[in-house]
Length: 218
Image (cartoon, rainbow, N blue to C red; front, side, top):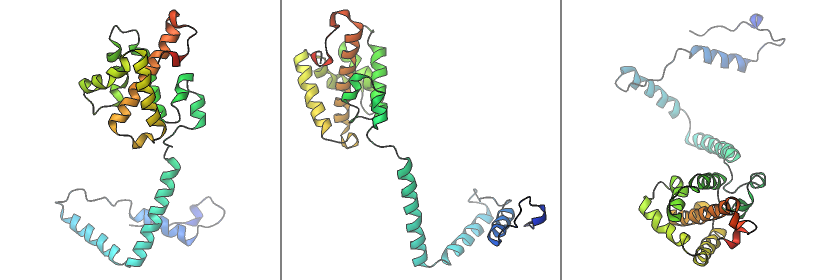
């Protein structure tokens, strides 16, 4: 049963408006209402019949107008919280130098995952091809390891061939949005970035390469 609202019990200086009273009454009257989760419950059919009756009272024109308003608001709210496909300038400023080359074309989380994984696999005794696959495997769940090994081989060859392959992949990446790339194109780009990341670790961790630029290694 709905409870009466007593303004004298309210601490506010001004009495509530009629709309506020109606809202409060509706909330109090429905506080014991429960959604009929059990379709076999006899009250379930009654509940939905009542809901259908409420909907039928709304004209088609009014229903369409309300729907358009609802979806317009929903789109507005969604666009306000949906992150940009490309990284913002503040994100790019936080990247290590080598990641700046890809920050405008590859999602931030993708770059971070490859960079972190490259640091982990670098000291391992595995082959370069295997290290490349390990850097990207977690990002490409639809690929089996054997397929990734095949895709990774061109990036583990001589420096000249690696540079040519990487430049071809990056050139394609620069002209396409990341989300528009096929899974194979994303895989190749990820492997090229992984090769880049491992090359940078080689520069910093191996004395022989000190003083060399990253574009001389890949």
